[in-house]
Amino acid sequence: MSTNLDRYSELQGHAGDDGIHRYELQDRYLELTRHSLPAIARLKGWRLKEDHCFMRVILDQLFQDCWYNHLDRRLTAYKQLNDEQLRRAIELGTMIEAGDVVALEKWNRESLHWRQKGTARPTDGK
Image (cartoon, rainbow, N blue to C red; front, side):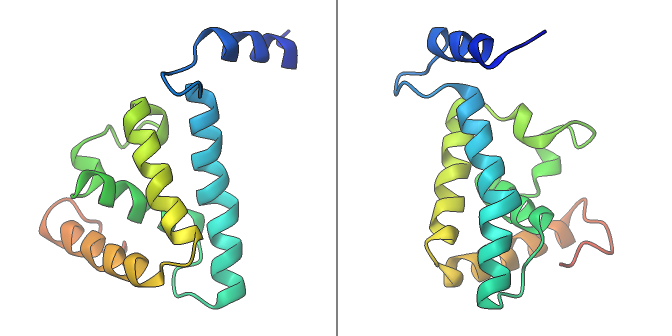
């Protein structure tokens, strides 16, 4: 049975150069995309409000293309990112969290464009 102490020991032994463990990066990414960004979006009346929309926009921006072209879409996307990609995804999410709606709208347009060019699903227009 895994305990918080087990996780703490694991975090201590496997930190990156900046002292942040991969699990902490994943947790921060999920906190941004699943909780913070949707809550801010609803409060401020943004067009994008759902967690999967923020994940789509951030991942597509990260790859400058539809993320399906770079990761296995059958697997959990954020778990396939390396530590540097996770850090960059967090940076992008933090920009949105800070209220950069202009960037969010631009990134959403780019994401939708990339999806129309390639592997887009017809209903992926959120």
